[in-house]
Length: 174
Image (tube, rainbow, N blue to C red; front, side, top):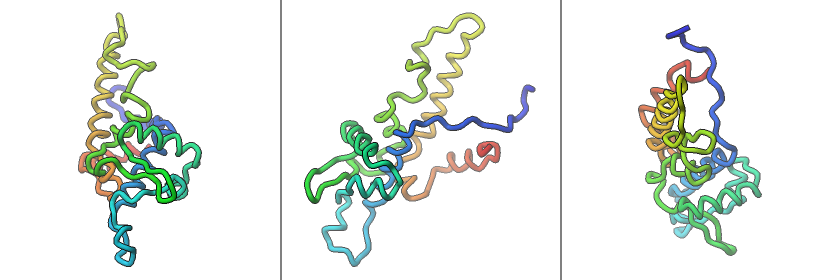
């Protein structure tokens, strides 16, 4: 069956934590955009805190789960936080400077590991020796897309051409 196109792709394997973290960060980027002109001047601050409750509600994320994710994102330098009645979360740097890979690494660690190890640290022998190169190529491919796409791209719906090309291939959807 060499050269044949397979009619089924397996599911993308991202943890719920990563999915929720990306959705929360994109929501923060979206809320940082200039609000309606009727709002008070203070509300136009791009670092206006958004509560975890607002993020959870906007994205349908379990609130308690989101709280722990936001803590990880704060520790990882993706978001800032402020306590108190006017508290909440905002992006630690511009959305255009935060890649999807940045968020994933904060939540789940290195991209494309095998059994919790980096592919270059694995020792394959005999007929399976080439698998190491496959895992390294997979990581490079994954990194190419996830480092290319920023939170700003997703929030604005303006994905890079390379992503649009790949997702336009009908076999990518099955």
